[in-house]
Image 1 (cartoon, rainbow, N blue to C red):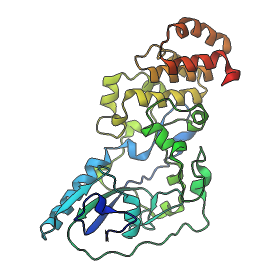
Image 2: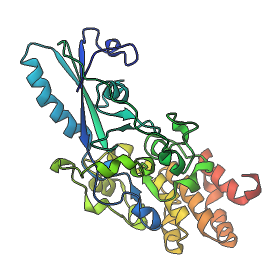
Image 3: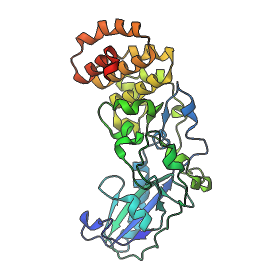
Image 4: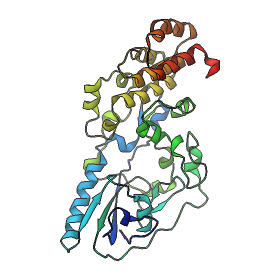
Length: 326
C-alpha cells in the first residue's frame, strides 16, 4: 500500500527525493494463546516475535524483491526495516494498511495487530491508497490489561513504563517499582496485542521462515539462568533475543525467578551472585530477597555484600539489609 510524503511522517527528512512510500505488513500471529505461560511461574514468557527468526532479515528480503520490481520501472528505491527513523505505524495508517489503536499498535481489520512492518521509499510518483479509519470504538481492553499502566490515556504510551521497553531496550537495572508487575515476562510483552478483538479475524502466520521455535514456548527459568555466554548465543541464534545479550536477558530471567515463589529457583539465583556481570548480580540479589527467609539472606550478605564493589549491586544488598528504606 502506498502513501504520498506528508509533513506528519516527513519522509523527505530521510531522503529528499522521495515521492512515494510503500508499506509492507507481514502477519506473525499464532494459533496458540500467547499469554498462556503467564500462569506458569517457573517458565519464562517470551513475546511471540522473539520466539522465531529475527523478522528484520525476513521482511528485508521481501522488500528487496518488491523494490527490484519498482526499480525496473525506472524509480530509485530505498528499503527500511527498523534501520532508520521511519515512522512505520503512522505511514502504514496513512497508506490504508490499518489504524493505530488505543495501544498505539497498528491494527488491521483483516490481519489484526500481529504485524511486522517495513517500508520502501521511491522516487516514483505512485497513486496513494486511502487511509484507514479508526475502528477501536469504545473498547479499552488493551489499556486495562497493561500490567504497569503504561497508557496514561488512549493512544498515548509512556514507554518508560512499558514492559516491552524495559525487558528489551532498557540497558540497566529495572526500577524496583516495575519488577513485580513484570511477572515471568522475560523478553517483551504481548498483553495489549493479545486481547485486541480484531485478532479474532486474523489467521496464523503462514511464512515458514517465521515459524515459532518450540524450544522457546515455555522455557524453564532454571535452565535459562544456567546459560553461559556460548549457550545463550547458541539457544537464541538468529532471534531478536540475541541482540540484547546474555546479561540483559538474565536480568529479566532473575526478575521472573524472584516473582516465581519457587524455592527450587532460589538456588539458581544464588549461583549467580558471583557472575561476572554486575547487572546479573544485582538482580540475583533482588530475586533472593523475594524467595529466601531473612536469616538465610543475612548469611548470604555476610559472604557477598562486603566484597561487592559495583554500586548498583550494593544498592540491592543494602535494600535487603534495610528493607524499610526501599
